[in-house]
Image 1 (cartoon, helix red, strand yellow):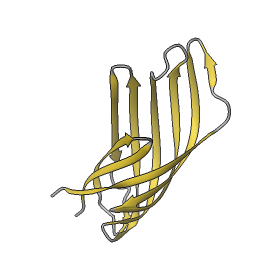
Image 2: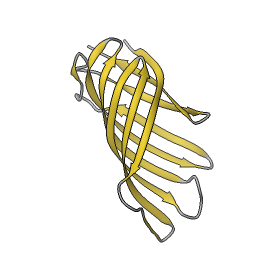
Image 3: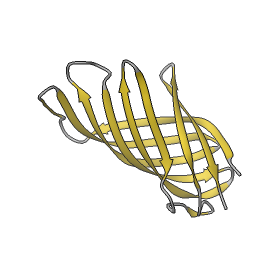
Length: 132
C-alpha cells in the first residue's frame, strides 16, 4: 500500500571545480546538501553530474545520487535516492527513485518515488512510498 509524504526542502549546490566548457556544452559536478521539512524530516548529502548547452540556456541534463538520513512519518532511518533529469524549452522530464534495498533502521525495505516542484524559488517534494 502506497503512502504519501509532503513538505519542502532547502538545497545548497556547491560546484566541484570549474565546468568543462567546449564544443557547445558544459560538463560539471556538484555536491549537494539538503534539509527536508515536513513529513520527511532530516538531511541529505550527495553528488550531481551536469551537462548543459552553452548555446541554449535552460537546456540541460543531470544525474545525482543522495543519501537521506532522518525520519519519515516518525520512523527513523536512511535511504538513497537516484535522480535523472532532462530540461529544455519543451519542458522537463525528471525521475527520482529510492534505490532498492538502500533503506536502513525503521526505513529498511522502503521503496518509492519522489517528485519535486519549484514555485517562487522554493522547493517542495511529494514522496510516494511503501514500507513492509
